[in-house]
Amino acid sequence: MMSKKYWEILVVDNDVTVHNVIEKELTKIFIHNKPVKSLHAHNAQEAKELLNNNADTAIAFIDISMETPDAGLKLVKYIRDILHNTNIRIVMIDSGNASVPADEIFDNYDINGYKEKNEIISGKFYLIIRNALKQYEQYKELKANRDEIYKKLTTNEVTGLPNRMKLTENLDTIGEKSLILINIDDFSLINEHNGFDFGNEVLRAFAKFLEKKYSKYAQVFHLHSDNFTLLCIKLDGETTEGNILRIKDDIAKYTFTVNGMKTRLTASIGIALSESGNIIQKAEFALKEARRYGKNSIKKYTNDLNILRTIHTNSLWSTRVRDALHDNKMHAYFQPIQEVKTGKIIKYETLIRLEYENEIYAPFHFLDAALYSGQIFKIFQFVLEEACKKAAQSSYLFTVNVSQYDMQYPDFLQITKEIVKKYNLPHSRITFEILENDSIAHNKNIQVLLNELHAEGFKLAIDDFGAQCSNFGQLNNLPVDFIKIDGAYIKNITTDENSQIVTSTIVDFAHKKGIPVIAEFVCSKEIYDYVSALGVEYVQGYEIAEPSANLLEYC
Image 1 (cartoon, helix red, strand yellow):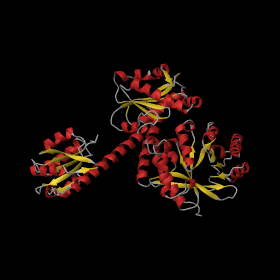
Image 2 (cartoon, rainbow, N blue to C red):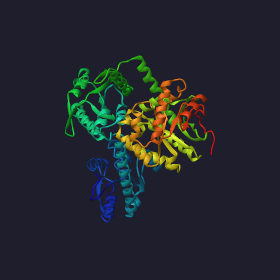
Image 3 (cartoon, rainbow, N blue to C red):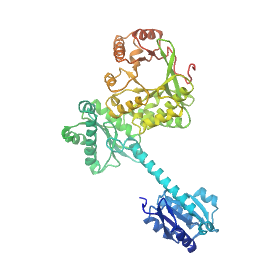
Image 4 (cartoon, rainbow, N blue to C red):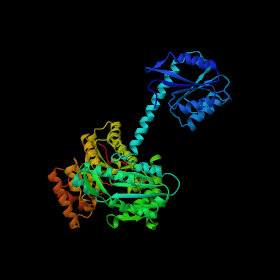
C-alpha cells in the first residue's frame, strides 16, 4: 500500500550533483500535507535492489546514460516488464549524451516524462514533482476502480465465488480440463416455501460445502442461481473419474444447516472429463442429459454426433457475432405494434438481425452462440441504443427484449439509464419485454431489479405469456404494464380449441388485473378479427407489417 506518511521518490543517476540538488530541494516540499522521501541509486543494479524493497515508490527520475549508454532505458524495461510495476511514474533525465533520440524513447518505452539535466539541477522542479505525483495518484485511483469493477464483473454477488465470466476467462487456456457442472434439484421450491433470503443462505452453505470438500483439486465457481461448477485443470489421484462420479453421493449424504434448520439437498450433475474446447457447452449438454433421467442424476459428456454438430454451429456463430459487433454488421429491425381501437401504430418492437456474407440472419441462428460466448449483453446494449435513436427521431414508443442474462450483468440499471439519457428520452418511451422463464420467476434479485426499472419510469411487459404456468404468479410480484400472449397460441387461434381457451383465459385474467394485452404472430385478417373480438388492445404480426430496418412512417 502507498505510504501514508510520505511520498517516495527514487533518483537513479551516476552524477552526485543531481542527487545533492534533488535531496536539498525535496526537504522543502510538502504535497497534500505529506513530505517527500528520496531514495538514491547510482546505477541500474542499485535501483533494482531499491525497487524490489520499495514497491510503493511514486516517481523514479532515471538518467538515460549511466554505466552504459542505455542503462536507464534497460532499467525502464525491467520496471515495466519484469516487476510489472505500472504505478510508478518514470521521468527520464537526459544528460546530453543519450544514445537514443527523445522521440524514439517516447515511442518505445513506457515513460511519463522527459527532462534535460539542467532542468533538474536548477532546483526549480517543484512543478515536475507535483504533476508527477498527481499522475501517480490518479493512476492508482483508476487502477483501484478498475480492479473493483473487474471483481464485481467476475464475482457472484450472493456467494462471493467467481462467476461464469471468470470461468470463461480461466478456460481460455490451452490444454485439457475437466468441468463438473452441478445444479441443485428443486431449488425453486426452496425459494417458494422459505423465501429468497433463506434460499440465498442455502446457496452460501452449498458454496462453502463445495469449497471445503473439493477446493484442494478444483476451482469452485457459482455460475448463476442454483448452478455451480468445479474446474479441474488436470486429473490426478484425487480427481479420477470414479471420485468425480461420487460427488453426487457426497452432496446427497451431507446435512446442510441453514439458519438453525437442517436440510438435505440433491443435485443433477453434468461432467466434461479431460476435454478441450467448448468445455462449458459440453458440460451443459451432459447436465441436460442427466436431467432427462430425473433428480439426483449424473452424466458424462460423450462425442455424440448431434451434440458435436451443435457445438460446431455455436462456435461458428460466436465468431460471427463478435465480428458483426465489431464491424457494424448487427442491425436493428423494427416491427410495428398497432392499437386495435384506433388502428394506429403507436409503438415498435426493436429486434436484432445479423448480416453475414450479404445475408440477414434472424436471432435464432446466433443468440445461443452469443450467450455461450459471453456476448449477449453487448447485443442488448446495441438493441437498446438503436431503439433510443429511433425514439429520438420520432414520437413512437419502443420495446426492447431483456433476458435474465442481461439483468444479471453488473450495473445493468446504471448502464441502461446512461444509454437512454444520451438521447434525452423520458424513460416511459421504453418498454422492456421480459423473456419469461423459471429463473426470473424465482430470482429475487431480478425481481428487485425489475421493480427498480419500473420505479425509474420504464414500462414492463411479460413476453410469451402463457408459455409457462409460472406466468400468472408473476403478476403478483412485478409491476407489469403489458402482457404479450405467447405467439404459439395466436397463430393457431382460429382453428385450435386449446389455443382459443388459453388466449381467452389470459385476456380475461389480464383485464381483471387492469393490464392491456398484446397479441403477436397476427399473420392474417382472420386472426386479427378473432383477437380483436376477444378484446385484445394491441396487435403485432405480418398482417400489420413484417420487421424492417426502417419505420413505416414518422409522426
